[in-house]
Each structure stands twice: as structure tokens, then as C-alpha cells.
Length: 366
Image 1: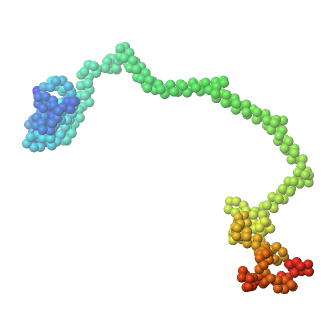
Image 2 (image 1 turned 135 degrees about the vertical axis):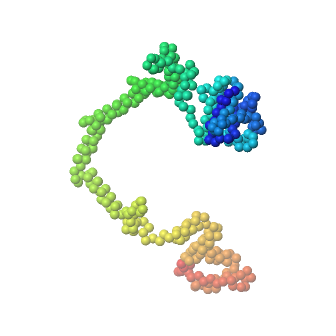
Image 3 (image 1 turned 90 degrees about the vertical axis):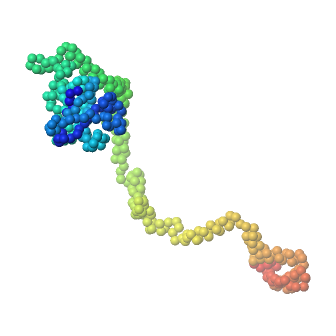
């Protein structure tokens, strides 16, 4: 093929080549497109030749089928093409099978000769395709025929319908809420009934507070009763007495943090004033009460034996005398005072002597 691939470089005498790829990502190997392989880099290059010393390099594009191809130019730095070579430009182009679509320069990205495709060139390429041309009238304005107008209307209608369909859920919800509100506000509806109830209550209150109404009569009665309390009458005296007490209470209380307590003067004559209710005394009282509530046998026996049965004569002494008399272990040795000697079991040894004073009637003196 003729030299269709061109690259403007900033230097002369360079060795350049390019690769060709298609949309699938496969790369031209000189005979077909294959999946990229690093080891096959040397088969992918299409050489480019400089025109004299112009720094313009040309390369022949292979006889490939019409389509879109991506072309990348490289600057060879070693003795043969390698993956480490620097890419210096590239782009994607439409290929008719014989020529590129109206442009063939590779736009350079790596040197000072980088340039852009003129707008006129692109416009001419677009308008070269009949399907892309717009109908114009004699003044150059675009005209729309009946067929085009119908197609445009259909397109707009389709887009509008799609937009409405996408929002149909929201529209349906809005319509449902609106219908519900309309039903609520209708006569007898939920909100209408609430408003009617509020109005009824308000009207009732207005009637009660009106002159002669229920609440108005209550207020009048209270005012009449209080106005008729002359000074010195029964209720007035009661109120005065209550005030005297409350006035005294204010002098008997003092602030204690966030609460009130009685003052020392208010409590000095109260129950327990001057008493010695210490913890020790309280413990002793509790111990005594506990003993009374649950006495032991020894305590009961001691209390009975030590109790007086005749004057100062204790139960123990009386029992001793009775036992001695019964067993013949005592001997009276004097009459006044009555003296008794008590012997031990050997009847020889005196265990103790008891002197008992008697009164005129012969009873033991107390």
C-alpha cells in the first residue's frame, strides 16, 4: 500500500515503526491479528522511513479490511524493536480498505511537532457521508420535512413517556395521598370529624364562660361567698387561727440544704429533751428486755430461791429449816432469840447456828 501512516518527529535520522490493533485488543503480526505476546514483539512492527532529512516519517498501512484501527508509533532505541521502546504517538482511525477517512497523520504526543486536526477537516469528513448531511433551504437554514418532523415528534413523545414511567411510582403515591386527604376533609371524613369535635368543645367552653354560664356561675358563687366573710365571723376566725399557726411554724423551721428542719429551740421541750438515750443505754435496755423475754432455768431458780417468803426470810432459808426439822438435824439451844444449831450427817459436828428473833406472837420478825 502507499505510505498512509505519517509521523512528524522533532529529530531527523531516527528509527521509527508502528503497531496496529483492533477493538478486540489483538495485534497485527504481519499476516493476522493475534493475542499479544511479549516474545512476538519483533513480528508486530511495521517500519517507517524518513523523507530525506525532513523529520517526517512514513509507513505503509497493510491491505486490511475496512474498519477502525488503532495505530501506535514507537522510537526504536536498540538494534531491533523491543518492549522497552518509547511510544511517541498514536490514535484510532477509520479505514475504508484503501484510505483513511480524510486524515492520516498520527497525532504526536512526544515532541514539539504535536498538532491537532483542523475543524474544517473534521467537518468535511462528517459531511462527506450522506446520512450525516442536514437539509437546508436557499438561505442555509436547516429544514425539517414531514417525515423528519413526525420522527422528531415520536422521539420526543417516547422520551416523555419513558420519563413519566420512571416516575410513575412517585406519581402514584402522590395521587394516593391526595385522594386520602380529599376523603379525610370531606364532610364526615376523619379530619372533618376531628375539626367538628374541636369546634363543639370550643362552643361549649364559650357558653360556660358567658354571663350566666356554668363556669361563670361557679366563679360568681365563690366570689359571693368570700365577699360575705366579715371580720370576726366564724370562718374569718378560723383563717386567722390558721395564719397564727403558720406564722409560728416559720419561726420554728430552718433551711437544711434543700429541705427544712425544726430549730433547736423548737425541739428543746419536745419528747426526749434532756434524756440520756445514748447508744450504750439503748443496748442495755434491749439486753434486759431480751433476758425477760427468754429467761434461762438458772435465772428462774435463782430468782425463786432468793425471794423473801416471810419478812427477810428467803425461800432458801425456809427450805433449809424445814429440811433440818424433818431430819432431826437441828437442836434449839436458846428461846429468845430462838437459836437453832444444825448438824452434819455425823450428828456430832455443828454445820451452822441460826438465830431467829420472834415477835410477841411468836412470829419471825420482819
